[in-house]
Length: 257
Image (cartoon, rainbow, N blue to C red):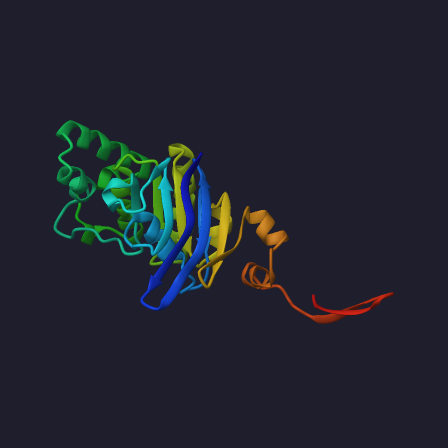
C-alpha cells in the first residue's frame, strides 16, 4: 500500500490550470524528491498533499485514508517550510513544544518527544536559547524538529535548505538522509537543486508545467531520461543536442541527438 497516493488531481487558480490530471504513488518509507524549475507546480503539489491548497478534482490518500478534504492537522503529516518560521520570543524548547501544547498533549509526553527530536538533530545543548542566537543551520534544525515532534509517518519539505550557504546545505543533506534512515518515515522533498535531488532521493519526480515528466530512481533519470526536457534539465553541464539524420534503406529520418 502506498504511503501517499495522489490520484488524478487538478489544481487551478481561477481560469489558470497549474496541475492537471496528475498521479503520484509514494511508497511507505520512501524518500521522494520533486524536482523542477520555479513555477513548475512542485510546491503547489506539496501544499495540496499537506492540505494547504485546495484541489479542484481528484483525490489524495495518506496511509490508506482519503484526506482530500481533511484539515492539515488531520492528515498525519509534518511539514518544514523554506522559511524557518520560528517564534522569536520563545526558546528552542518552546518552539519545539508549542504545537504539542496547543494540541493538549500531556507534559511528560511533550518532554519525551522534545528530548528525542533534539537528540536526533543534535540540538540538545540549544534548548534554552532563542532563535536570534542561533546560526542558520541551527534554526533549520529547530524547524525540522518542530515537524519531528509530531510523531507522524509522512514528512513534507518545501525547499528547506535554500536559505543556507553551500557548506551548511551539504551538512544538512547528510543529516536529512541520516534522519530518514533512522526514522524509516516517508519523506517528500521539493527542490530546484538537482544535486540535492540526486543525493537525497530514492526516486525523483521531474516536473515541468504541472506534469511529472519522469518518476524514477536518480540513476535511471540520469542515464535514461524519458524525454528531451528531462535530458536537458538533469545533468551539469547539460546534455548537448545535435540535429542529425539516420539513413536507412527506406529513406531518411530526421532526429535530434
